[in-house]
Every structure is written in structure tokens, then in C-alpha cells.
Amino acid sequence: MAKAMQGMKVLDLTHVMAGPFCTRQLVLLGADVIKIEKPGDGDVMRYYGHDPRFGRNSPNFVGYNAGKKSVALDWTTELGAEALRRLVAEADVLVENFRPGVLEARGFGYEACRAIKPDLIYCSISGYGQESILRDNPAYDHIAQAMSGLMSLQGSEQDPPMKVGFPLVDTFSGHMAAFAIVSAVLRRERTGEGQRLDVSMLDASMVLMSSMILKYNATGVVPKRVGNKGFSLSATADMFPTRDRPISIGANTDKQFAALCKVLGVEELIDDPRYKDASGRWEHAATLRPMVSSRIAEWEAEELEVALNKASVPAAVVRDLKGIVAHPHFNDRPTFQTIDVPSWGREMKVLNGGFLANEDSPESTATSPDLGEHTEDVLRALGFDGDKLESLLAGAQMQ
Image (cartoon, rainbow, N blue to C red; front, side, top):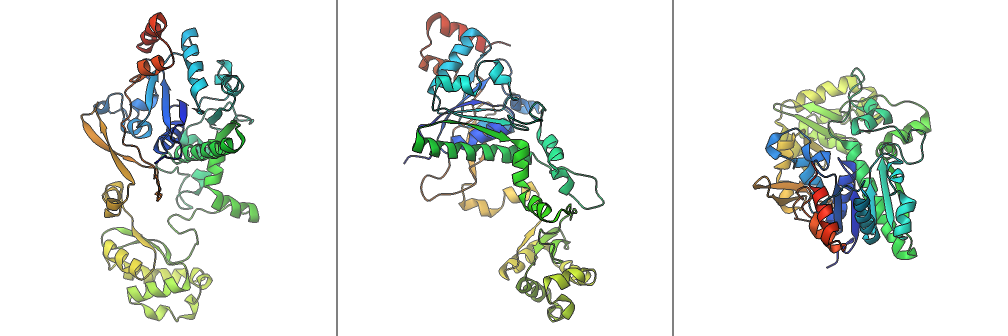
């Protein structure tokens, strides 16, 4: 059975996180992705984490680049540029995340590549977009979190601004780029035309925060930080301590509040006129929360999680990564896939595409490439041989 992007060739000129995450999603959809890396060191993501146990194949590099081919190529040389032009000519999609203007200056901007492959889909990922007063500013995930206002929404009012504890913007920007590419592929199927895609980390952040920005745009009121409270700001939608671990509860509606009270054994609160609706419960939260909290504190977290969910009250124990990765939920779902990592001498779990389909769900169990592992095979397929091939291969070993 054919996957959505099976038969598509993707030229990956990306590094670090947002770009490689994007092209990893295309691998999972069946695309043939050729990753171009700098001879000697390759993608700096290979060394992220500074853990010598992994050599030049860090866990993040392995997970974000599994299933790709690696070509070590110095395309700043005349012969290297010739090889890159041949790769462009065969590509359906080109993805890059250099700063705006860098590839144009080196002869591989959109117009130059379109002249080589007229129906090419050319996706650029950058901090602030190709056309912006900020286009020349460099950006990393935590910089985008600061710039976008995202850091101003984390924690409680008394806390300083705080970033999300993982590269949220990088990952979401990669997803946005993959979504844009798939939409461009669909358009090309109908029109025969390629196009330029401009994905900005700052723009992606705005989309990610749409729930807060929409409220601000309508009211002009800057939202206050609410800590662990739910988006609804219900008095019983928050994180509460139990006997062993915190639990997050989302009793927003009247029905959910009543069910919560029954599970906790405080049915008398249901008929209390102060708590008859959400606005009343919020107005009188100072009296309501202590009564609810004291009963929650008598439970163990996982027992309460089961009891509340059985009563149709959303609830989840606040788990760490060790707790959730081992959860039996994943036993029957292909959220994770296992790949072999020869350089480590063992296997590793990597993430799949994050969704299922009744036909051709995303999947790839191929491992990540060692630096330049596919250089010779790819160059031979492009027609290089003899002295030219030897010269390119010598350049690929450059330290």
C-alpha cells in the first residue's frame, strides 16, 4: 500500500531541531529524505547533550533523523555545488532552515532552484520569516519563547517569566512546516505547480498560543498567569495534592462538579447556593477549595484518578517522563517505534507520527544515518564517477 508521500524525494538542508523534525515527519509518511551535512562534523544536533557515550549520534539526532540518508557534501566548492544542483533537479521538496538570504547568496535560493526544477516545493524555516523587519535576527527555541510572549504565560503571578521546559516552539514549527509541505504537495497534484513556503518560528508561536491571543484581541486585557489552573478558570479545575502525588482535575461543568463531590463524599456542596454554577464556584473559591482540597488529600493519586475518570470527571496524576513512557496506554498503540542504533550497539525507542489511520499509518523503523553514510551511493546515482567522484568523496572526509 502506498503511503501519502511514497515516491517523493526530499532534499533536507536543515540542521538542529525544527527542520530535522519536519523532515522526520515526511519520512514517516513515506518520503525518501536525503540529508546534506557538512563534512567533518555534520549537523550540530549529532552532539547535543554533550554526552560522550553517544559519540556523534546523540539521542535527539537519532530520533529526528531516523530513516534518512546522510550525504557529506561541501557544496561551497564548484564540484560540490554541481552535485547539489543535481540533487535539486531530482527533488520534489527542498527544506532548509538557514538564515534568510544565506542560500540566495550561495546560488541556491528559491528562484535559482526553481530554474533547475520548475515544480519544486521549497520550504524555508526561520526565526522570523523571509520577509520581516526581524528577518536577520538569529533565533533558538528559548529566544522564540521570550519574543512571542509565551514565557509570560507560564507559572503563577508571583513567578518570574518562565519558559516551557522543552523545545516546544522548535517542535511545533517543524510540524507547521510538514503540514505546509503536505498542503503544497496536494496543490501540486492539482495544478502541476511548485511553490515557496515561508515558515516562521514566531508565527508558529502565535498559532500555538491562539487560545490566549484570541481572548486578548477581543478584550484588550493582558491575561494573568494562572499556574496550574485549567483554561476554564473553574475553581475545581486545578492541580491538588494527594497523599502521595499531585493530581490535576478538570471539574468544569455543573455535572462534573456534582460527580466530583459524590466521589469525595461532600454531596452537601452540590446544593449549596454559593456553588450552584461555575461563576458562583469561582466567586466563592476561597471557601470551596479548602473543603475540596482536604478530601482530595485523603486519597492516593492513582486511586483517585481511576475513581474520577469512572465518574466522567477528567483527572490525571501529575506524572514524570518515567511514569508516562511506561504507561500501558502505549502497549496497543504505535506511539513509539524501536529502531536499531548500530553505533550504540543497542536499540532505542523513537516517536512515531502521533496519529493513526485505518490505511497506511505513519511508520518507519529505519535507523538514523552515520555522517556521510550514503554519500557514495547517492553521488553514483547522480552520475558521478571517475575523478569527480573521487574528488567529492575526498571532500566528504574533510576534517
